[in-house]
Picture 1 (cartoon, helix red, strand yellow):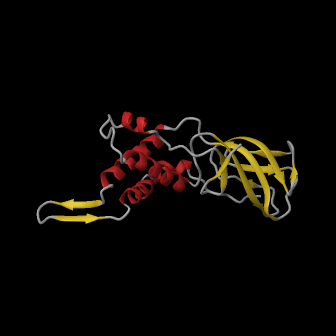
Picture 2 (tube, helix red, strand yellow):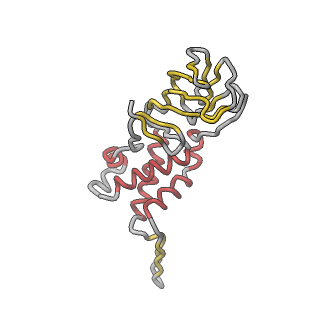
Length: 197
């Protein structure tokens, strides 16, 4: 496998695709921005902003590898809310075989308590949604529309008395603030790292 490090501290096999494609965006918006060169970078920025808010890649389902510090408790927490398979668990340099349990929310518990160590465990696993839910696709679309609308840097404008306000790095700023404004939609997909024993 050719792993790529993610911003959330784990590796994925290959590279992360955007959450939606340009064709999917065009279909969702009735082609209003078809052939607009601003759309693809806005989709990439929106995907990155939404994933950063959620603290993991969310979609699609990918083979992953996490190297974790161990603190002497049995629980190893993976950055995911959709763990679908665990391929291997290595603790303190030893493959534990099948001597572990795991849950969908990302908790892995080896039968034997790991010793405290930096980078004391390596877990190979599969995580992510097989299909992008409609609410997430809609969130991406909304963030992209906001980014494309603001991509020339106009944050606000008025008519009588003429007033125009500009922002810097408009597309990224719009994507980031758009992701934050979608918080209620994104909350079910956001990783909250618990530290139970």
